[in-house]
Amino acid sequence: MHAPDPASSRPWKPTPLAALGGAPAFAEPLHVGRPNVPDRAKLLERIEGALDRRWFTNDGPLVQEFEAALRRQLQVKHVVAMCNGTTALEIAIRALGLKGEVIVPSFTFVATAHALQWQEITPVFADIEPATHLIDPAQIERLITPRTTGIIGVHTWGRPCDVAALAEIADRRGLTLLFDAAHAMGCTHHGAPIGRFGAAEVFSFHATKCVQAFEGGAVATNDDALAEKMRLMRNFGFAGYDRVVYLGINGKLSEINAAMGLTSLEDLPRVVMHNRRNFQLYHHGLGGLPGVRLLDYEQAASASAVHDQREARNYQYVVLECDSAQSPLTRDELVEVLTAENVRARRYFYPGCHRMEPYRTLFPDAGKQLPVTEEVAAKVLLLPTGPTVGEEEIQTICGILHRAAAESAEVRSALPPPEVDSPARRIL
Ligand code: T4K
Image (cartoon, rainbow, N blue to C red; front, side, top):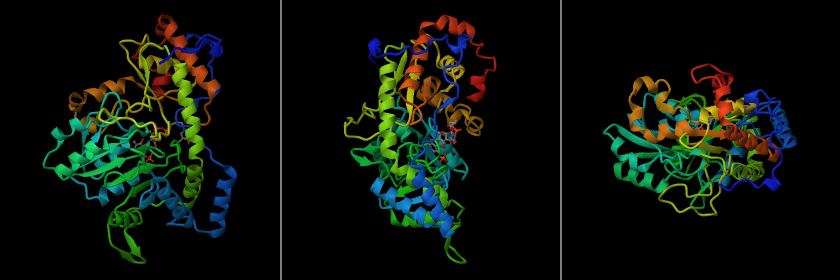
């Protein structure tokens, strides 16, 4: 990274660091995942329409409009909207007939693993590539057993997995390939929107996502029969009044959620443009910070792929790696420093699913097979971005990190020792 240009720099934090007794830089907490609020008038108009129609859920007109808009956005034949991303994963997994064991990365939000375990399917954790944080296809083959039925790739941070390598393994070994695309709305792979790869791809519209529906999710697929099955499964298996043809659950999206989803989807270009600008500001502002790497969306997403500059990214996450061997402060110390300033940096996806229950008890030795996951989970730090964060906030955050590095000896001695409880540790 380039060193910051002093001519364009403001006094980043004139008072002492909060960790050293100064006032916090921000009066209110600055979150990773602050929801984007799209056009309020449009949103309220849609909600008024639903109230007037007195049609609130059960595949209403706004849900159908949202699905149609998503089909256009993703250039895919079917989109089945659901009440959240986790339910969408569960229904996709069930409709695809996955059972036994399924290979997933441990470095993901725990919902990816839970969606399997909840259905008594064993998640088998695969390691990731260090440069991209994406599932490493080279690690998959040795995890396949006679019980394996599928692979779930996660497009972590909105960068595509090595789709071709995963598809090749899945085809050759007779496995089903599903993608968790919760982070990947608005992102492409070889110029095509993520959403059409594998048997199906699953999106989340949680409040913290770049397209959000308060809560929501969807499965995208080109498979007619699969789409039909998932539509039935999300509605208790009803194929008409009094006629149930599958085991189903209630996975429906409500009209009010669809109103927000539609309005938020229309706002996506503005959000992405803002996030991209924020990413560049962070890139500039963090220049020269020892031992800290900003995950670069512009680089090739996998070792085997040459990155095409025309690929779209949503820049919804600003992901730092703090290398304790070179950084004067550890990742966790930086989190403490930032929390004291009211910057709620996050350690996604620390400590890795394999160290969370029930997996930690079920597979106590899993970490031995996941060295890259362990290493990455120990050094990742996410910084706030999104439309509520702008140049001034980013300059202040970068200033805090530079100050903390320059004053690392004082900072370290002021922080509570690692075994002591602290506000930052309670939040994390
Ligand atoms: N697969 C992957 C790869 C995922 O990342 C996720 C979800 C899923 C599957 C499952 O999809 P869903 O079932 O959730 O649709 C957050 C989100 O809750 C979660 O949706 C997301 N991934 C994950 C990466 O981040 P938490 O537990 O870390 O944070 P949460 O929800 O408390 O929100 C983070 C921060 O955002 C808060 O500290 C405050 C702020 N916030 C949050 C909400 C909800 C607000 O300012 N306003 C709000 O309304 O999981």
